[in-house]
Figure: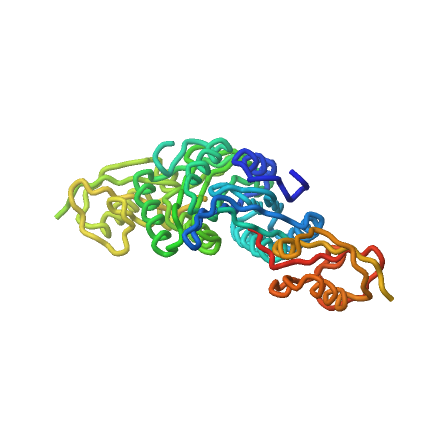
Length: 133
Length: 133
Length: 78
Length: 78
């Protein structure tokens, strides 16, 4: 991990399973909502995406991700933890570049909080991509 | 696994990670939405829940889960796969009893399809619980 | 015309009757329901629905030999 | 009053200028924006916003020595 929110290269299945374990030692959690964003092998102009290279304004990512987490926790009082991890560097088609996990007491605020976190990540996290064909 | 949709005892972190690997060999998937339901150590009348014992009408679970998956796939055309696993037997507080995973091309239908699957599981899957204190 | 059918009890209905399964004779689901609740008055407080051959019943239905009727208290999965 | 500030280029702005970072002198963000786009006309087609010391700028702002200005094309995370 480059910082709390950024990891170099893909978010591997092993890292995902470690992150999910981190959020699981709380017997008051009844709902765990996870979103994983993956690189698709989309085709544009007859060229197929092999990978995406992500770059980030790393200092600002920390500030914005902290702010997103604060916002979600205050909007959804039943939410217990919010985790955001994004890739920087090269992520191949089929690999994961974004991991969001929201734990909550019950399902309603958890699933809505997860979606809200995702929308804010898309809107506010200073991350850019470059397709590699 | 007792059948495609039921597992005896808790849905372990290992099983979750295996199920998530199953849905991941598709380079057209851009979004993976997961919901995990866990047993909470709720307190009622001064007694704290130690575990929940789940029972199910197993033959009907298969029929209803298949029907839920068909419904979600036809309502959300961007959804690629839907996976539903529920526990039967004893699941301790802190352990998982429900796993739902929806893969999709993009995030919108994936997150909505996952939530919709969850609501239909709650409404239609013939499963019962008994708290153990 | 009465038929012999299998009745399965689930969840709280299992606890209320102390049975998982029992054979009954009835002509349709309305009379079957009456027969069962007469035999097990403790079922009266459980708001159960019926499934016929794994399909949730919306209306009452005639019964045929070897039909499987399930007594389904409110679902509690998740 | 002009100040010396650090300017960081990201995403497409990095590719358009061939730079990741450069020092400029300017009194406020409006004139800084003009100075930069004059020097790098290729930036004109990129709809970038500015951040001042890691905070997204809503309005133009005066600049102080050692301020960090970031040129931010539309975000593409996820």
